[in-house]
Length: 289
Image 1 (cartoon, helix red, strand yellow):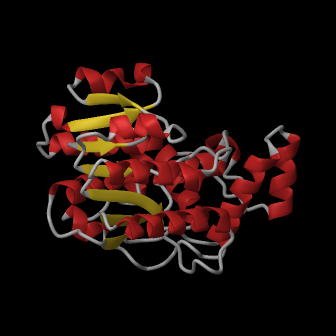
Image 2: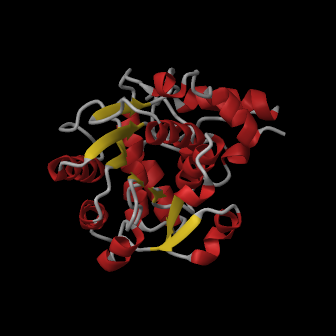
């Protein structure tokens, strides 16, 4: 039995879809969800549904009963003690005899010199905790999702331009679908025990590059406005965006500007057995006419 956490989210859904495409029977896949009503499409396909919350150890313990492999997608609850949430899942997995944990972490150049220490420290601490349990693990150090470009760029970026203070920094953006497929490979094939993989695209692009691609795809000019951090922060705060969110986005913009995600490391093509989706193709599928 394979259990996927965050199963109603984009990455969890992508992983389950890839598992099904690889021939894993639906009744051998468990989706961990907080709201069963959001998992109707999975239930209709025969996937097992378990209700669980990262903050509720007993629910996790029940959900992980009989599970052999766990795909642990990190918590996105910024108001919670994320490391404690992760430990709850890991402890419940260990107690139930789970044999293999695949964990989604973050690929970055230097853990010690980063604009997003609040993210990196939790990811690294979680990975170390998994290793300390003695359970077989595979760590995915992911690049930023291609799917996040719209979130970073602003709600009206196709009309008013990309407003994001990332300078000329480049990122090897990866679609969630490719990450989900790579996870399915690791969960269904041997040779990945105690491995850490860089899950990044073959080529890194700046937001200037993205603006050029989008202009060609949409047939209208999509400018990259490239504000400085203070201008960006003030504009978002004046628009009513919570300061915590502004700080979060600004930190990621700074990390991109500093080239932190452009590590020139990747195992994705090897895992997929093909080249990852090119960013231009992803943008065409997402924003093309």
